[in-house]
Image 1 (cartoon, one colour):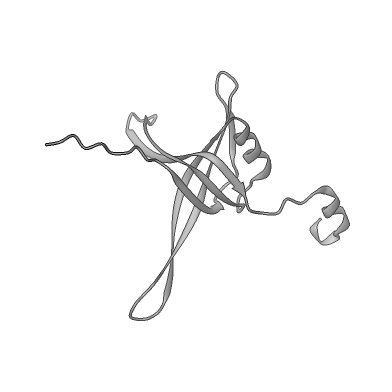
Image 2: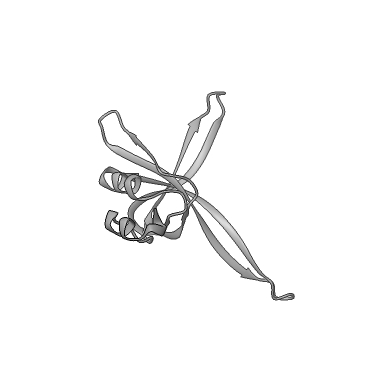
Length: 129
């Protein structure tokens, strides 16, 4: 059998809303790392009834360095984002000694979709306070 050369492609783009506030931590060397999760909706239509059904998928996201700081500063639960990155799988042991496997998205780019309010906008509009 001939050797088949398969390209190594690992790239993902998802958009959704944060399910929780980002958690900012630091490695022992002081590198910031933020973790959060997003809900991504997919809509399907039942051919017989015509009913549209929403199906949500949940993805864990990891951001490093300056991107981690920006995510922690600007994002909160419910924020809309587009995340570009790659999939990474890893395993870890629980305190009970069980082995768990996880797949997460390591972000290379996070686009913030919500409008950032400045202090001037908040003070000019009393309904926002």
